[in-house]
Length: 131
Figure (spheres, helix red, strand yellow):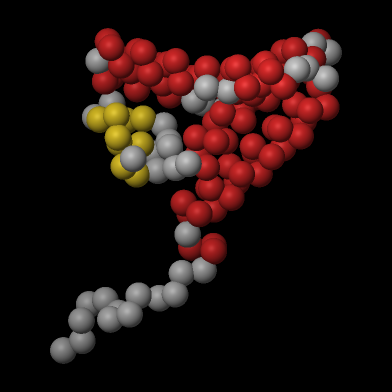
């Protein structure tokens, strides 16, 4: 009798490796943000100083995993810095644009390293698997 699955798993192509695709996408996001940030004329010192700022949301875990996950996910949701960037462009405020790009770059770096949005079950449970 044949086994219910192939003895040798099928060779995975790039298109069938979603985590690799997400990391490639994240690298493109970081690259685009760094390039665009350089065009704002804002100091790179600000970029370096604020790059890890969204991770301050980890402090919300002091209130428990449900609150911690909710606050962390809000700080790591791409829609917020994207909206901030739109506001910056609409008002022609280079600093607002730069802050949005720093925030988006942080999100890209997190995804590039394999970190995802948190589940309230455990800090290590994310939308991309266990960290």
